[in-house]
Length: 329
Length: 253
Image (cartoon, rainbow over all chains, first blue to last red; front, side, top):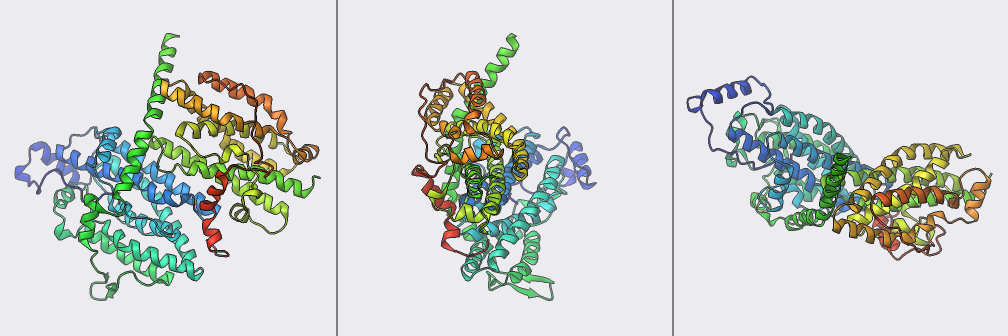
């Protein structure tokens, strides 16, 4: 999940009395679990919220290439390099797919990219953390894609048809990435002492950023209610986070690594693992642009876009010349 | 049957070309001019790494000393690499990267089409598989060279500069030595010089459409495919590529 802290375009939930007939009909369709399609009528706020969420999700896929690309040239075997290249290619593909889905709501990819580059749209906080050793690549696949899947499996049931279908397709690939990531870190956890130390270091550093991916606690999450009513959001942040922790703790134990949080403990009564809150001040710092890699990540994307302007212009000019020539024939 | 060491050298040339170029292309990850190009470049790099696994895997088998494709990729030093100099040159701008890709793809396509009927079935099988990928690569790199050459004034200037810079590195792909002679004699591979005519025709046709001028000089840098003298760039590439294998010897990844 690459979308977090999505501000719903309106505050509070409209009750039925406040709704127009059209809005009531729309809400009824959602309540009946019907999918909303691009040409259907929808409230402006629903449209705006979805554009934000899908746009942020798309940006995350694209920016997410950078921390992984950081290791492509240092991958330790040909097979690992191939796996990582295939994964990064998938992520870029997801970005493309999600931008296209957002375009069905009338927002162009160029406009979304412009907003990202101007710092007016975000991408997931997780990609503002560095990848410092090779085990990070395994941990990103396992923990980051793993956290994304928890959210995205829920989002397969989201009310907007193109987004829901994108999630179904993306989840398949993400599950594959998560398994490959776990396999990579397993190789290290069961490897030499140095490799095991790398694996431990990666888990220690990435655990809290990974559980931050689900966004603030429900009590602090002010924008969720309307999104839940519209089924743009399907489960709450805390529900999803708990699900992730529950599925991941046994995996860490299987690797024989120390748990990254001394607060992790099975709670018999709840039937869930207890765990410590991440440092939410750090989270909000990262969101505000003060994470360890925010400045560099955005600069990389802006540079790529600006340095590539001549390429886009050139190819466009050629396409115009070509169609003019065809027309003249 | 050809001398096994010569066959080993020949396979290293093929595998090192794809390894080194695949690596260079992968350096673009996340930094290309448009998302579609990020995908295409990652895909190209992925194909080339896949081909590397096959060529170097076979090279290790032929050598018979128990070295795997990974051993060959990650544990040889510069002087043991047998790729042409063209593929180890730094990426430069996107235009130079795609120009280099086209100049290589055009050669690779012709070479693989001949290798598909190699007397060595293992080589023929790899060539057959790789041909399908390279047919797509050359179409894409060729189209991009045409699009940018015949695009704006700036893109044209950049592409001409890329061609001027890279052209002296093209000739090495067509040089021939005793290793090649042995391959020809055994029916394993064509003489590289024999591919030149078809290559020139292909390149000329793309450059004409791209409104680019092939430099007149026939001078060709050499030293990569024999390992006699690589560029300074290869060592730096190996520093990052081989780092984990070198720093943690014997670990399994």
